[in-house]
Length: 309
Image (cartoon, rainbow, N blue to C red):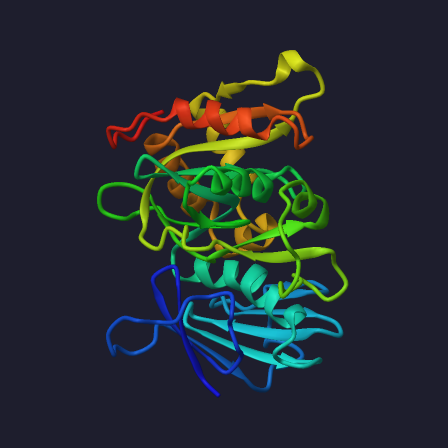
């Protein structure tokens, strides 16, 4: 059964169920993206990249595969073909579809995916980037508990060349939270889907506080672990360091870098750095200081709709 969903403002038709995504409620226009079950070749013709998981053709077509899960063929920013090796409706098939494959699709469409979660403060988007385990989803969940809407979790898609400056496009109306965070926030697990069958990580719905419309990107905080109380602070990055930090925070960096030329990446990243300040946010990794961190970060953001924090 084909489902019709919305992702980053795109109309998506899919042979796979996509319960992570809201139903499409827009007009009857042709789909922007089609996700189909079908045959995926074992090898692309004359690939320019031929790694164990990723192959890439000269036209940017990508084949991505996880043994035992699925192979995915991503073409032109508009078509994804999935050859599933387990039940097509399993969370394992979907987590890679809405992760690496989604990142590739965005890059093919000229959008920039960042490894970041993003919340709305004062009508603007504030992103929290960093490596896996840095606390991006946890911090977004803490903002959500304090009444802020969430635009994205783990993958923040930026339309860098939108009129008026970079816009964050809303993605998934849920957070992916580990079991210890669920316990700390006293969140029930009953009826929640696991991110992958073997992981104690759960999909937590946003209960009406999903920011469904794009917002201008106002600031990016790169999360770093503070080992001393004196490090618990935000440090603004100079333009050169900001661009370097943003490049490190491209989602699935090595894969997306292969889709974007160095000149193209520099153009996109400098546009973001010019439009929104970047900070290194030193924070202790425990959960005890989250309320204070949320209050301090929210207070840093002006409410007049300007682009600078």
